[in-house]
Image 1 (cartoon, rainbow over the protein chains, first blue to last red):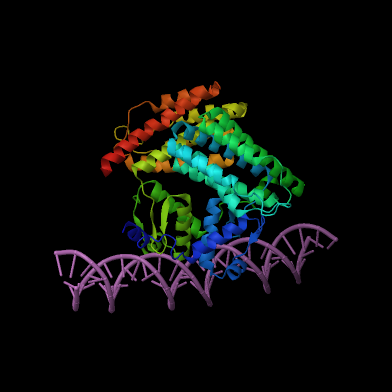
Image 2: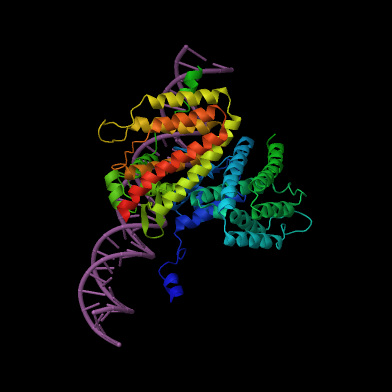
Length: 234
Length: 234
DNA sequence: CCAAGAAAGAATTTCGACAAAACCTGCACC
DNA sequence: GGTGCAGGTTTTGTCGAAATTCTTTCTTGG
């Protein structure tokens, strides 16, 4: 009964509007790096390639611009958001500050359910291969999803939904930078061990250690990506 | 030469597009409370009242939805974002966490220019009346602007632009809640003294004291607004 | 030869009308 | 008496073309 009354009147994404569908696809293309930073987004071409009119396209672009994944130039159209070294640094610093604050609060407030969710997320992350190919690095979407869930689980108990949404957005943008650099960067540090250390510190309610490890985790990744980005630009 | 080359090719907001113009006005109407939370936003009515077609209106609404000031319901149009007590609490907690993190970093990194900017912003805030009317509370836009600048100046040196942008957004949303409750709430606490205390602690590089005061500052305001909101709803 | 200006070309933005979905109302039926 | 279904109505979402703006190119004068 409950299931039915939930399934029928709230199908959520039952018949997504063309604008939102295009928005999702376009976002995916930007995050994956298929649309490179700075690329001009011509309405005509996009409309043709995505099979939509001008209105839904424009709506999607406007939304992307509000999310920071595209830039809008008045009367000059849209382009994919730039990806410069300076912006990467600001992004990483923001991530460290925001996530450490959320993690500290999560550790302070988290209950047993939160602990279990962290344990579970870490377990699932460990059971998935990071790369689809054993020799060459090829991003595994499933690992990416588990990775995201793990980090979200850590912060989930902070009781500040807007902050969590912000962390999600930063995570997305960071994923974009990683995708832009990933053909080269397959650093052989032990990411799983880092995750384990963070999880343990969090479960031990050692906020100082957990936040320090988390900050290190992000700054290290940022250094790799930044090095590759810098090499590519100049 | 330099002045001319700066004035001509980068007039920034020279000829704002109709969509952005409408977006600004609509946002102002939501933030000021003229459009109450939950209000249905019918495209036809809006288009008529703002003197624009469907396309720019829809684009503005889409942007507002991405910013969190409006909600989108697929195939069911838009409505002004809700303003419930639970959301207010999450908002305040987010503000406290994000701004305290930014302030701590700002205190760690701020140089002499940052100190001077803080002093200046506080001075300017003190010279403006908080209410336009001495007897009854009537929001003074100039005071609001100075208030915003003061809090921004405090965080400005943290070196994390995305985090600052996030704080701006939270500040806006908080301003909306204040506007929704302001007919009643003219608490006679000494806000100027609170600001002075925060500024002094920051300039003394006492991060613990400064963040504690800042958190108290927001939580106190939140308590007032929340009390009024609760009285109105329940 | 270089600079400034006009005109053509291309792109963005906006409008008005069309199609599709949701909503409301009234009616028959269990 | 309430439920479910058909009708019309309102509202949203989409398309294609017009209007405006930007960009580029070509010309003209110094």
